[in-house]
Each structure stands twice: as C-alpha cells, then as structure tokens.
Image (cartoon, rainbow, N blue to C red):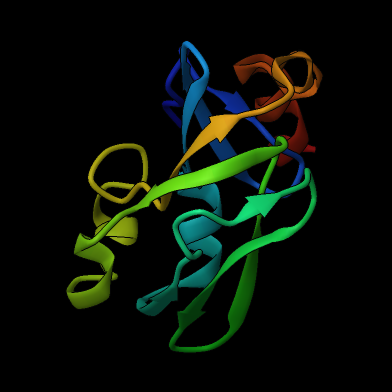
Length: 126
C-alpha cells in the first residue's frame, strides 16, 4: 500500500497535511476501503472550533456510518464542497480530491504526536 510520505496519521485513520498553521484533513485509503462505498458525508460548520478527538463529521457508507475525528485542535476554515454532491471522491481519491476539511491549527505541538507514515503502516498491518 502506497501511503503519502508528507502526511501525518491518526490512530483513527485520519490523515493530516500541514502547511504552516493550516491543515487539510481526510480519511486514509485504508479507512475508505474498510467503509466501502461512501454515499453521504456530513461535514463540519465553517467557524467551528474543535478540540483533538472531537467529531469532525460523519461518513455514511452503504453498510455503516462512521465518525471522523479531528486529530488536532483547530478552527474549521473550509469544508470540501465537492463532497456534498460526490461523496464517492473519498473512495476514488482519499488523499487528494476526497479531503474533508481545512482547519487552522491552534496547537501545532499536537502534530508531532501524530503517527509518521511508518508508524501508521505498522498500525494497519498489525
């Protein structure tokens, strides 16, 4: 499995791509594969301030519903508008067009607590 090297990962299968104090968040290829065909995504409200571990949104797949957790403290700057009409983007391109939210990171030290690509590989291969 090819995982992007420039991302950090959570134990709940979210990925984080940091650019300064802004982070894109999505779910990993492993997570979307486990969920199956995604049919609906409920995303956060712009302006919401969330703490690490809070529910960022909900993903509804044909066979289950799963929460997406925010891996670091932050304020929601933007949600992916494409997911409203094409939630399957998460299945098709989880690390690209299937991103879920863009946040302003309020505690950058939490990024260091996330998993590296090798640590995440160990988690999903365990």
